[in-house]
Length: 255
Image 1 (cartoon, rainbow, N blue to C red):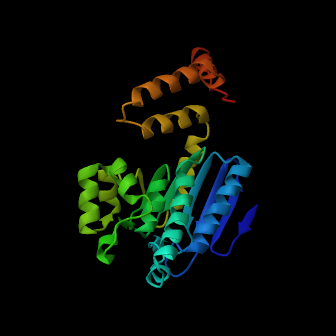
Image 2 (cartoon, helix red, strand yellow):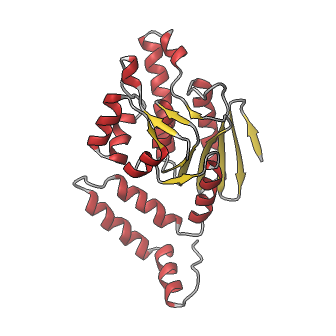
């Protein structure tokens, strides 16, 4: 089944829901894409999709940034409303009860990179370029970029990228931890889909517990949360099935 909202489409194949951005010329993250992403997440929740893959229909662009035309003509109230709506959908993506993968071919700048950072994992095509250039506009990343980028690459590298507004290519992005896998140019979506299929046979309960634990890594409560998560898994059906399958030398059949 494929649903069309003009600038955002999505289709389901098994437990994977693929979301495609299509707002020429550069997938600016204006309200049409924001609203389309909200509906796509509604569809993912309704389908209980385990993995969401986000990609672009536009050659050369994942998403080039926020909607500058909208912001340039806005007063503070309109600007803050737009920012709140963009932050809300990215926060919802980050907290989705599954795994999300951003398939980045071409440019992922500003809000486009913030969308990728809100995803669990990132695959970059060989010609991808990523950056947060907001200081060129006299602004800072305002949809989670100052919070999520340091978690991905560390404080020093985040400061370097944001303060200089420079772009990084796919190889540097992999080296510094900004993306997780590389793909040939134009094939990020295919590699992201293959990664989704690689994730599906594994324990969804363990994957989500790992995400929750890693999210609080370094926080005072991090070790306690890890302890609680692994205890729940051990006592639950996923841990018991995994251990039994190992001893019986068979593939696990997770609930």
